[in-house]
Length: 278
Image (tube, rainbow, N blue to C red; front, top):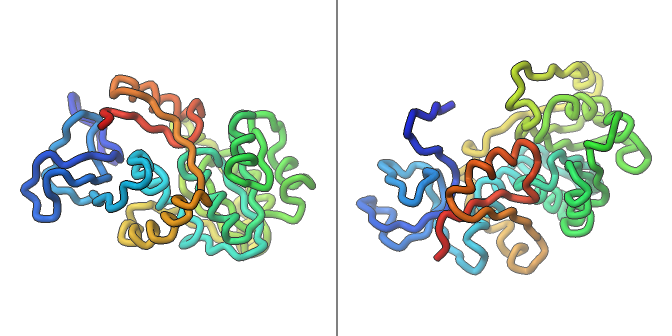
């Protein structure tokens, strides 16, 4: 993992306009998304992760979210890693976030039964009333996650696909509830990132008994499929069949607080920082 040096800007995914270019693939005025610095102007010596934005009929912020890295993450994690089938049971943790909200809608489009978890009543309401999840619950209110998952309200017959964003106790509970030949796409483990001693997972033997496949993935491996992904989801976005929620912070000075808020679940939807409006 890249270590940030003193006085070096933090890197992240963003939308930018090219103001000058000596690269043959990019010209002044092009809109692009990809790796950029947390700064008003960024000098890129080698734009290895940079995509031109061909369609401006949707908000440019979408290219940091639903049409950018989080959207591609949702698409490949569900379709390439898990291969959902009509009628299967899908569970998504951190479901109201930048990735989870799209995973749920894609799974519904594939004919699956979808349940998500989030950390507040507001987020649970979003999952059910805006994103079309079949059910959702606030994990902070549940004392026994295993009992919650297997209850008659959620997964009495077990889980076919788990889209993993959390790790820790949640993953341990899910393993007890996976169905035969279930699939787990390991996208992230946000509950573990800031722990001095990460939590162990104790129910891995259930993967053997139930022939469960758990596969971690990194979205950059799938960048060659980016335009296939855009072709698949952009029409549904324009027609309103896929919806997206953003949590927008104004000004570069708000970026540190917005970043810290991600780890406590303060944001609702994709966290976006607007550095400059056109």
